[in-house]
Image 1 (cartoon, rainbow, N blue to C red):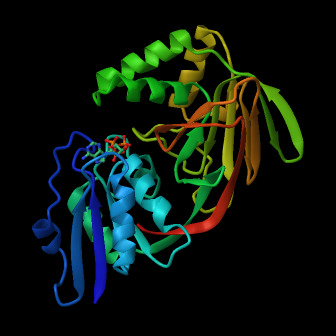
Image 2 (image 1 turned 135 degrees about the vertical axis):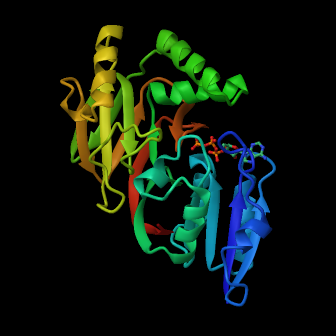
Amino acid sequence: MKKIYFIVNPISGKGKHSITLEYIKSFFDESKYDIHVLNSTYKRHAITLTQEALDANADIIVACGGDGTIHEVATQVVDKNVLFGIVPVGSGNGLASNLSIPKDIEQAIIRVRDGQVLKMDVGVVNGEYFFSNMGFGIDATIIDNYEKSGKRKLGAYIKAALNSAQHYTAKKMYVTYKGQTKEVNPLLLFISNSNEMGYNMSLTPKASLTDGLLDYLMVPKINIFKQLTFGLYVLLKKTEKFRKTDYVQTDHITVEIVGEQKNGFQMDGEYYEYDTNKFEIKMVKGGLQVLY
Ligand SMILES: Nc1ncnc2c1ncn2[C@@H]1O[C@H](COP(=O)(O)OP(=O)(O)OP(=O)(O)O)[C@@H](O)[C@H]1O
């Protein structure tokens, strides 16, 4: 008998999905599978629910939500003998797209039942896991402003992006990789495991979930016209060809932010603030066994 826990974020995406125990059971043979459904009722609740599933010796734990929910569930199962599944009902669904997991709920549940296992790499920043990407530049500021707005609509996101573009101030940082240290003032300092950010967009099209490497992309603070040009390179998925871009693939990066003691960054699309100015980013190769 296989024990499967589905951890559902009921507000993911537009919150219009309804993944109930009865619905999920209709896909599984009851003599072979013991199915459980747990709904998150507040931010980061999925972490506790995943612990509950682990304590109950789950064989498979499935995150039903967007990249935020995937982050909360997956952090608990890295390097554990549990399979991880995804039913992508978020708004962006970057990681699920990179794994070619269908957006159709029914098809995604069938992947959990019949799919193959991929041992995917996991990023680590100062001991915290991330699965898609993290960043110290304007992406972090946009997410911070968006979260502070308290709204979850696309309009709030666009407003946060415009506001951040106007008021963003680049911080001086020292970045070290492959034995060399560079001083940078980034508009973007983006480190990615996945080749998709969601909405079919990518800053790091060459990234692979299984190459043991992180893709580092740094674009310095540039004027608004050059930013628009860079936007075109993003749409064409050719960011590394933009003249000012520094793009490398490596398994170890350190970032030291000059001047401030408290520093924020985004990780899998959520904003975090740490009481340090030194960050070490590395990988757990093949640390997550994901069904796809
Ligand atoms: N019941 C709840 N009420 C409020 N927030 C919740 C609840 N359950 C989970 N959350 C929080 O909702 C946030 C967003 O979740 P998630 O990433 O799954 O959806 P999304 O933002 O629509 O998708 P994406 O990240 O792909 O754009 C997460 O930070 C999660 O902790």
